[in-house]
Length: 177
Image 1 (tube, rainbow, N blue to C red):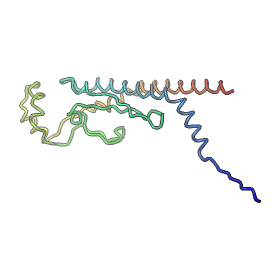
Image 2: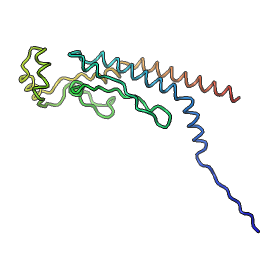
Image 3: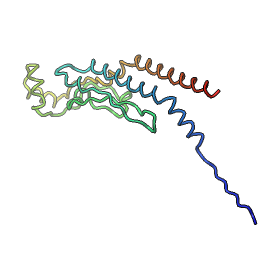
Image 4: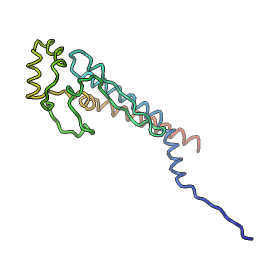
Protein backbone atom coordinates (compact mmCIF):
# COMPACT_ATOMS: atom_id res chain seq x y z
CA UNK A 1 0.00 0.00 0.00
CA UNK A 2 1.09 3.43 -0.79
CA UNK A 3 0.43 6.28 1.51
CA UNK A 4 -1.46 9.15 0.05
CA UNK A 5 -0.21 12.54 0.87
CA UNK A 6 -2.41 15.59 0.66
CA UNK A 7 -1.02 19.05 0.86
CA UNK A 8 -2.26 22.50 0.11
CA UNK A 9 -0.82 25.95 0.04
CA UNK A 10 -2.75 28.86 1.46
CA UNK A 11 -2.10 31.82 -0.80
CA UNK A 12 -2.58 35.34 0.44
CA UNK A 13 -2.39 34.67 4.18
CA UNK A 14 0.30 37.32 4.68
CA UNK A 15 -1.73 39.89 2.76
CA UNK A 16 -4.85 39.02 4.75
CA UNK A 17 -2.99 39.39 8.03
CA UNK A 18 -1.57 42.74 6.95
CA UNK A 19 -5.05 43.97 5.96
CA UNK A 20 -6.49 42.91 9.31
CA UNK A 21 -3.70 44.69 11.15
CA UNK A 22 -4.15 47.74 8.92
CA UNK A 23 -7.85 47.87 9.76
CA UNK A 24 -7.12 47.74 13.48
CA UNK A 25 -4.52 50.50 13.17
CA UNK A 26 -6.32 52.84 10.80
CA UNK A 27 -10.07 52.44 11.25
CA UNK A 28 -10.67 55.09 13.91
CA UNK A 29 -7.93 57.60 12.89
CA UNK A 30 -9.03 57.55 9.23
CA UNK A 31 -12.70 57.90 10.13
CA UNK A 32 -11.89 60.88 12.36
CA UNK A 33 -9.66 62.38 9.65
CA UNK A 34 -12.27 62.09 6.88
CA UNK A 35 -15.10 63.43 9.05
CA UNK A 36 -13.03 66.38 10.27
CA UNK A 37 -11.72 67.14 6.77
CA UNK A 38 -15.25 67.13 5.39
CA UNK A 39 -16.38 69.57 8.07
CA UNK A 40 -13.40 71.89 7.52
CA UNK A 41 -13.81 72.02 3.72
CA UNK A 42 -17.61 72.45 3.94
CA UNK A 43 -17.22 75.29 6.47
CA UNK A 44 -14.71 77.08 4.24
CA UNK A 45 -16.90 76.52 1.15
CA UNK A 46 -19.87 78.08 3.01
CA UNK A 47 -17.74 81.17 3.67
CA UNK A 48 -16.89 81.41 -0.05
CA UNK A 49 -20.41 80.82 -1.41
CA UNK A 50 -22.56 83.81 -2.44
CA UNK A 51 -25.00 84.94 0.27
CA UNK A 52 -28.18 85.93 -1.64
CA UNK A 53 -30.84 83.75 0.14
CA UNK A 54 -28.55 81.47 2.21
CA UNK A 55 -30.06 78.37 0.50
CA UNK A 56 -26.81 77.79 -1.36
CA UNK A 57 -24.73 77.96 1.82
CA UNK A 58 -27.16 75.80 3.79
CA UNK A 59 -26.98 73.08 1.12
CA UNK A 60 -23.21 72.51 1.42
CA UNK A 61 -22.69 69.28 3.34
CA UNK A 62 -19.99 66.61 3.77
CA UNK A 63 -21.10 63.07 2.90
CA UNK A 64 -19.23 59.95 4.01
CA UNK A 65 -18.38 57.59 1.14
CA UNK A 66 -18.76 54.50 3.31
CA UNK A 67 -16.04 51.90 3.66
CA UNK A 68 -13.85 49.67 1.56
CA UNK A 69 -13.77 46.51 3.54
CA UNK A 70 -13.64 47.99 7.02
CA UNK A 71 -11.48 51.01 6.17
CA UNK A 72 -13.24 54.37 5.53
CA UNK A 73 -13.32 55.20 1.80
CA UNK A 74 -13.38 58.99 2.01
CA UNK A 75 -15.64 62.00 2.13
CA UNK A 76 -17.44 64.03 -0.54
CA UNK A 77 -18.53 67.66 -0.22
CA UNK A 78 -21.84 68.31 -1.94
CA UNK A 79 -24.04 71.30 -2.62
CA UNK A 80 -27.72 70.35 -2.78
CA UNK A 81 -29.21 73.66 -3.94
CA UNK A 82 -30.79 73.11 -7.37
CA UNK A 83 -28.96 76.07 -8.92
CA UNK A 84 -25.55 75.38 -7.36
CA UNK A 85 -24.01 74.05 -10.59
CA UNK A 86 -24.85 77.36 -12.31
CA UNK A 87 -23.21 79.37 -9.54
CA UNK A 88 -20.22 77.07 -9.04
CA UNK A 89 -19.73 76.07 -12.66
CA UNK A 90 -19.56 72.58 -14.03
CA UNK A 91 -16.54 70.59 -12.87
CA UNK A 92 -14.37 67.87 -14.31
CA UNK A 93 -14.06 64.60 -12.39
CA UNK A 94 -10.78 65.81 -10.94
CA UNK A 95 -11.48 69.48 -10.23
CA UNK A 96 -8.00 70.20 -8.89
CA UNK A 97 -6.60 69.94 -12.42
CA UNK A 98 -9.53 71.45 -14.33
CA UNK A 99 -8.81 74.46 -16.49
CA UNK A 100 -9.67 77.78 -14.88
CA UNK A 101 -12.70 79.58 -16.30
CA UNK A 102 -14.74 82.54 -15.16
CA UNK A 103 -18.14 82.12 -16.87
CA UNK A 104 -20.55 79.34 -17.73
CA UNK A 105 -21.40 78.63 -21.35
CA UNK A 106 -24.16 80.88 -22.72
CA UNK A 107 -27.55 79.28 -22.13
CA UNK A 108 -31.14 80.50 -21.92
CA UNK A 109 -32.42 79.84 -18.39
CA UNK A 110 -36.11 79.79 -17.54
CA UNK A 111 -37.25 83.28 -16.58
CA UNK A 112 -39.17 81.85 -13.61
CA UNK A 113 -35.86 80.70 -12.09
CA UNK A 114 -34.51 84.26 -12.27
CA UNK A 115 -37.49 86.26 -10.99
CA UNK A 116 -36.64 86.13 -7.28
CA UNK A 117 -32.98 87.03 -7.74
CA UNK A 118 -33.64 89.75 -10.32
CA UNK A 119 -36.38 91.37 -8.18
CA UNK A 120 -34.04 91.48 -5.17
CA UNK A 121 -31.47 93.22 -7.38
CA UNK A 122 -34.03 95.52 -9.01
CA UNK A 123 -33.54 94.05 -12.50
CA UNK A 124 -35.88 92.85 -15.21
CA UNK A 125 -35.76 88.99 -15.31
CA UNK A 126 -36.22 88.92 -19.11
CA UNK A 127 -33.21 91.19 -19.62
CA UNK A 128 -31.16 89.03 -17.23
CA UNK A 129 -32.17 85.88 -19.18
CA UNK A 130 -31.12 87.49 -22.48
CA UNK A 131 -27.80 88.54 -20.98
CA UNK A 132 -27.13 84.98 -19.76
CA UNK A 133 -28.04 83.68 -23.22
CA UNK A 134 -25.36 85.95 -24.71
CA UNK A 135 -22.57 85.84 -22.11
CA UNK A 136 -23.30 83.01 -19.65
CA UNK A 137 -23.11 83.63 -15.92
CA UNK A 138 -20.11 84.57 -13.79
CA UNK A 139 -19.12 81.66 -11.61
CA UNK A 140 -17.94 81.42 -8.02
CA UNK A 141 -16.29 77.99 -7.58
CA UNK A 142 -17.02 77.93 -3.85
CA UNK A 143 -16.35 74.19 -3.38
CA UNK A 144 -12.99 74.45 -5.12
CA UNK A 145 -12.15 77.60 -3.18
CA UNK A 146 -13.11 75.91 0.09
CA UNK A 147 -10.88 72.96 -0.74
CA UNK A 148 -7.90 75.12 -1.71
CA UNK A 149 -8.20 77.56 1.20
CA UNK A 150 -8.44 74.78 3.78
CA UNK A 151 -5.11 73.22 2.78
CA UNK A 152 -3.30 74.16 6.00
CA UNK A 153 -6.09 72.77 8.22
CA UNK A 154 -6.26 69.56 6.16
CA UNK A 155 -2.51 69.07 6.52
CA UNK A 156 -2.80 69.47 10.28
CA UNK A 157 -5.62 66.90 10.40
CA UNK A 158 -3.54 64.48 8.31
CA UNK A 159 -0.57 64.91 10.65
CA UNK A 160 -2.84 64.17 13.61
CA UNK A 161 -4.15 61.01 11.90
CA UNK A 162 -0.57 59.97 11.15
CA UNK A 163 0.39 60.40 14.82
CA UNK A 164 -2.66 58.40 15.95
CA UNK A 165 -1.82 55.52 13.59
CA UNK A 166 1.82 55.59 14.70
CA UNK A 167 0.75 55.59 18.38
CA UNK A 168 -1.55 52.58 17.76
CA UNK A 169 1.24 50.75 15.94
CA UNK A 170 3.73 51.33 18.77
CA UNK A 171 1.15 50.28 21.35
CA UNK A 172 0.59 47.00 19.47
CA UNK A 173 4.34 46.35 19.16
CA UNK A 174 4.82 46.67 22.91
CA UNK A 175 2.12 44.08 23.65
CA UNK A 176 3.64 41.50 21.24
CA UNK A 177 7.25 42.05 22.27
